[in-house]
Length: 131
Image (cartoon, rainbow, N blue to C red):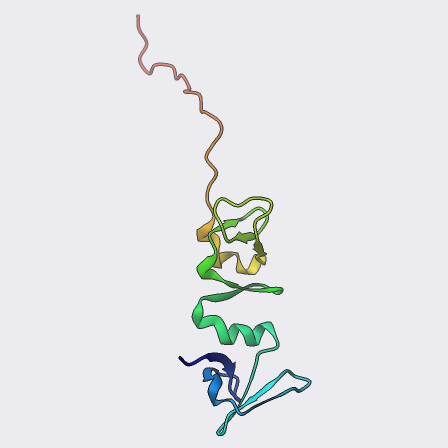
């Protein structure tokens, strides 16, 4: 069984590398560099780089502070602009914030609350007068 790791190549493109092919890992100020006999790879150190690496697996940037696996998002609260990973959610539920610019990515997950009021039927006067 081969263990694999997702890394970025020198051009910043995502790739999968077999761990058994690694010959060295070298720490740098920009994060670790991974070497095989033929190439050098690096692990993402910013959210932008992580998004490049994981976007094809269903991750989206919903706010400047997060990259979220959309495959696990179950609900969106438009008032608080938060996505939740369970439905229904509670005050203890894990969540991620959503910037106003990214609401369109999760708007379809918003559930309308059932109305807790009843409408009264409005009586309208008859269009025809009785004599």
